[in-house]
Amino acid sequence: MDLEPALSRLHQAGASAALGDNRIGLEKESLRVTPDGRLAQTSHPAALGSALTHPHITTDFSEALIELVTPALTDPRAVLNVLRDIHVIVNRHLGDERLWATSMPCVIERGSEIPLARYGRSNAATMKTVYRRGLGNRYGRVMQMIAGVHFNFSFADAFWTLYQAEHDARADPTFFRSEAQMGMIRNLQRLGWLVPYLFGASPAVCDSFVQGHEADLERFDACTLYDPYATSLRMGDIGYQNKQEEGTGMKACYDSLDAYVRSLTWAIETPCPRYETIGVKVGDRYEQLNDRVLQIENEYYSTVRPKQITDWLEKPSQALRRRGIRYVELRSLDVNLFEPLGVGLEQLEFLETLMLYALLQDSPRIAPRERRDIDENQVRVAHRGREPGLRLARDRREIELRVWAHEILDGMLGVAELLDGGADGPHVASLKRQREKIDHPDLTPSARMLAEMRDQGEGFFALAWRWSETHQQAFKDARLDPEQNALFERLAAESIARQHEIEASDEVDFDTFLSDYFAGRVPSQASMH
Image 1: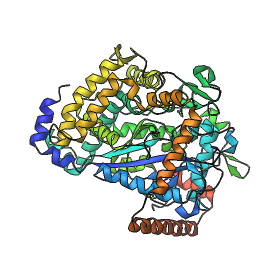
Image 2: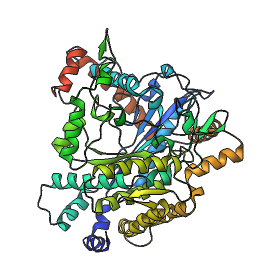
Image 3: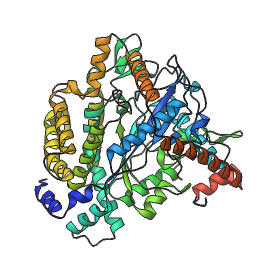
């Protein structure tokens, strides 16, 4: 599609200024590890506050898998500054532990040694832990220990107003924005392979992680497995997926927001024979929330998701149905070993350009054949992305990755200029640096990791450990503004008080609470994480 006419009209309508109020938020996961590089068995540090209610510091699957959450801000530098402050605070309370600097885990010998995240004594807390126990029973606990970075993005209200006017669309604004973003999501799926190629940082794994897939990878040394041209094994077929081919998964429908919500609702309401064998409540303990295809919507694995901010214990599908899409969550980013925060400014600027490019492109519905191509392209790039001459599937033909990537970045140039308000700015500069990675794959993070492992004569564990130590020392040496320090102390105290309020407000037993939740009867009060 020729974007020039649309870009010209948007420029004349003042879109550059409006786009300056786009918002970016980040969620960054990290494992806590012991001084010998093993998974921490300690509880989430109490000084950091309550993982149930803290707005910026929580946990994901495990007590040892910490998750750092920024607010959504208009300046990507400000987002990274907040993330840096959170890292500084967390590192102050780690004792002799470290945050693991990569997506793929440290040494994990048995899934049974992975402690599930705990959130207190309330029904809401119990539900979160049971959900995680269910994930472990369904997919294995080790698989849940892969960390990532989620890029949350929303266009400015002022941009939406002029964009809808540009389309002369008389639909309800909430409906228009939601359907436009569903089209954007479909295009992000089509182009999604580009993200692990440019930013993938998991070309190798500790062999303690890989269970039953050793034959699919080559041995780098006694303890490391890898693919020579891999970009992101996290996004490949050894990563966490809902296994449709095994009869236990599903594919959400992205034709419209209504179709998406209906497909997730179907999955939450439809029994799965394989999960029925696990049982739901076995004796006095819940092994999973239910025996459906999905326990809750968040279980559905996808590289990109439509999101709406949820009220307390409101289902994500209910929030989307009631209030439409608030933002889009891109989930395919590896933790970048070479960035202290796991993500950098250049990356955020490129991804904002990609978001706008995906919105402006035509976006037909995804047919079954194209869906298979999208999935296959992701796996090819994850395992072989830097392979010379690698070809991907597009429009029922094969095209060389390098050729297709250049086409995309050529098309993105005008979009970057619109964001920058001219031909010279940060988005254009970031685009230029990503282009260099296409012609020189050795510049990608995945290639740099393998090159450093060879140069230093070290395996994956030694590389990750060395960089984890480096980043930890940098955060320990960093200074924090006294006002920010006081803010985090206040947030920690308030989160603990809020947890106690929730625990004191429970009026029914957990069985009743869970039944009420799935029936939509739980009183609205922050979201099931």
